[in-house]
Amino acid sequence: MAGNTGDGDPADGMRAKGLSGNSVGLLGSAVIGVSTVAPVYCLTSTLGSTAGEVGLQMPAVFLAGFLPMLLVAFAYRELNKVMPDCGTSFTWTVKAFGPKVGWMCGWGLVIATIIVLSNLAGVATSYFWLLAGEITGSDDVAALDGNKAVHIVTCLALVAVATVISYRGMTATKGVQYALVGLQLVVLAVFVAMALGKAGSADFPTSADFSWSWLNPFAVQSFAAFTAGLSLSIFMYWGWDACLTANEETTGSTRTPGRAALVAMVVLVGSYLATGVAAQMVVGSGDKGLGLANPDTSDNVFAALAGPVMGPALGILLFVAVLASAAASLQTTFIPVARTVLAMSTYEALPASYAKVHERFRTPGRATVMAGVATGVFYTVMTLVSEHVLVDTIYALGLMICFYYALTAFACVWYFRAEVLRSGRDLLFKGLFPLVGGLLLSAVFTKTLVDMWDPAYGSGSSVLGMGSVFVIGVGLLLLGVVIMYAMRWRHPAFFQGKTLTRSTPALVAED
Image 1 (cartoon, rainbow, N blue to C red):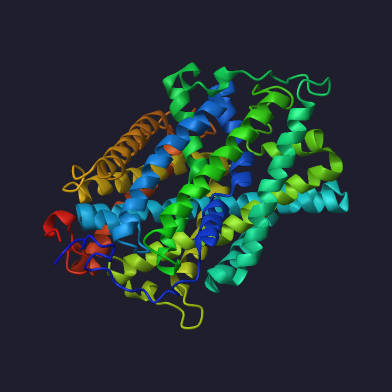
Image 2 (image 1 turned 120 degrees about the horizontal axis):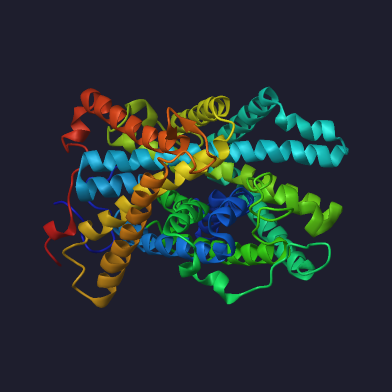
């Protein structure tokens, strides 16, 4: 029998991976979601870029980005209830649409995670040297981040450390993760309070008075600017689904991960709105002075605002928070990529060697190491190729996120198509919400794809006349197609539907 039995048991065809079960509870799962997103890192990386695109409507764009993420989260929750498989998007889209679509969805998740890991490592490296410079009082030490060789070597070292920690399992640093997430949220709260207190003072001539119009997405000057800002906003929420990829290791695997994802998203949207409003009130969203959109500081806003807003002593806390945010996320972000690769290998969509689980740590060891190596190579190459790799890969990341989140949302609608009219709840959570979320993300994907052809999109750099963001985004998706067909030749069983069958509840008789 295919599909779901209707009582919460996993659908037929799901394979055990050998992971350590019941090792994470609701709080731990929610912390994984928040930690993977890395709110302080996301804010310092994208506050300026988003303000540069949409101006004072930045808070509205944060809300607009939250909506499709929330709707897609319902799709994840419903699919996880019947198929708590660590392959998440990959496994679910295979069950709904077949092996090719599922493989590309898995690829989208994997490559998006590699991009995020590389950016996390880059930000952690920058703040490592900035913090070292603050502590030693030496500008020369802080300037070491500008030395490309030193930067790359430091970045690779941080990736190696994170890989080792992830290799040893999620529970190894549970207390540390709690502390790092708590530190981020507390420092953000202090920043918000001090920014609001100093807004309008003579020390901040670019301050802006709060207006409810800041929360109006229709006030954005152009649709192109709105979609560009929305793409960045969507990136800022990426990572909450790490709760779901740890489902086979979570207590109450069919329900806890979905609840944890919703908790994480509420925490994130609250943090982003408060910080965005406070930052605009104290320095504005212009491109002069400390304005958020100043091109000299927009890719690392907190580095410019830490001292002026919080003072020399407390400003160091903001440096610590960004470093902690990036470092903590660097470790937890290995969870989705390693477990997706593990699932793909288990179902023979990738070489079987990646399906091995460490006997002692019960982690996908080889998949974790592969993710670390891929991250180091990707960041090194992109740093050497483009001076604006951080900005461009973040813009390209929005394309990847929209791609696999939208596919997962549509997979929910299709998989449960025979159930959506059974009740009002099913209509909303299995049909309408995922459908609208998928359509919104598809619209952003399409508009972003068109806009990123222009070299002016992102950092303004180009490759053979094409925008570098377009080259990065589309090039990585096309690379996935090439690898998929290579895997189809090497591992035909998966693509013939023999290892993970396409099925829906429509094929199951009701109890």
